[in-house]
Length: 491
Image 1 (cartoon, rainbow, N blue to C red):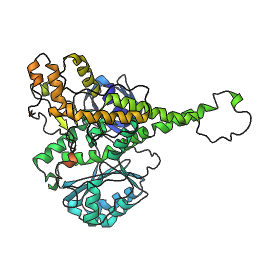
Image 2 (cartoon, one colour):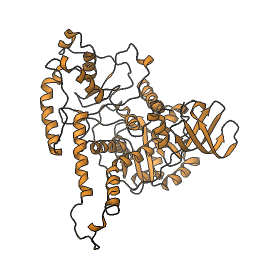
Image 3 (cartoon, rainbow, N blue to C red):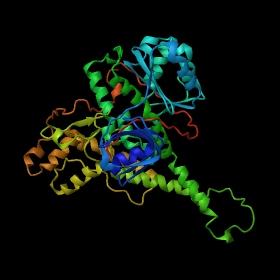
Image 4 (cartoon, rainbow, N blue to C red):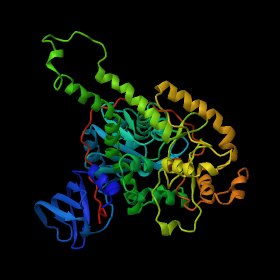
């Protein structure tokens, strides 16, 4: 078990249904406990091969598990007579739903083919291509516009545009995980903004700590769309594609909970301080009278210190672009050494961010280390990172970042080199002639065509115009147990 991937991810899906493929058979049950020492505990266990149920709980060890095989239970709704009514009755009882969509250029100019809706325990795949607008008239519109039902969506702009202009539906009460990711980044860095938004794949890796092997369905989706942009019009749709549709919606519910926890971390810290202010302090300060002073207490003033420390840390860990936005690493599943040997590395460029290039295989800390080691060998025109900031106010951090950035385009960016190419040159520092040829254009061939800096949802929407969404109020945390059937490789 990899503590940084499987362990953290499985802890996020506790109390949900999983499927384990072992040496001695296949078992499924409710995930009750995951231990870093390769121990997994399930309750309500069922032997899939024999159909027999095992009473109580059952313990499994990592060395018993053979492979991973993600599965999810879903219901395809392609007609009104049998399943549509029951599905709508179940959906209308929910307070939180996750919603995803697939089609060809899903916006006012495109075609919506599938609408995926996931609840605590079920996933429904509505075939809008076959059902047509009647699907919305018979209940879906009411759900999508209901202010009492929270809809969790990743990048709701395109679906909102499509529903409004093609079906007259005003999508309401949405928790957008893409917007929440940017808000969380701003809180983490003391108020700075990132240079680009995150795809669903990046959000799941960054926040939910999903191991790359669990996200193979997103890579497969992107590959299929590149081969056939109209793949979602195929009928009947293959089980593998239906599974992709279901997984897209399933992961959104636990992702929302993790993002909420991260955004509420400051509140939790401040409240913990409030709880111990008088309880663990001296009784003399209480004086036996009710407090009448309404000045901001010391316990809450530390929020200002939090922000200052985060700004200083962000100034050390991130570079800034010409717009004053922090350039963060683009996350993608790592490839094995055998898969990437002998190939040119990929330089990932975020859309609408000409100078925001970061490698997918390293962090900014690694880049800083490489540059520090070769500091004495650099030419005068090579870029320098922002110096550490000490004993400065939060306002000084902002001003220094922006002022320093104003000088960067004349030095760092005049080379037209990506950060990946820059690192390769630093590693070949002995060849001084190569370091002097910094103004020539460099063409980097992509070894992984399906992994680009553009999110999958942007692949076939060249004519879209961005509509800035507003972040709706977030209701209280609800327990959103999605039933995910998977066989994690814990060995």
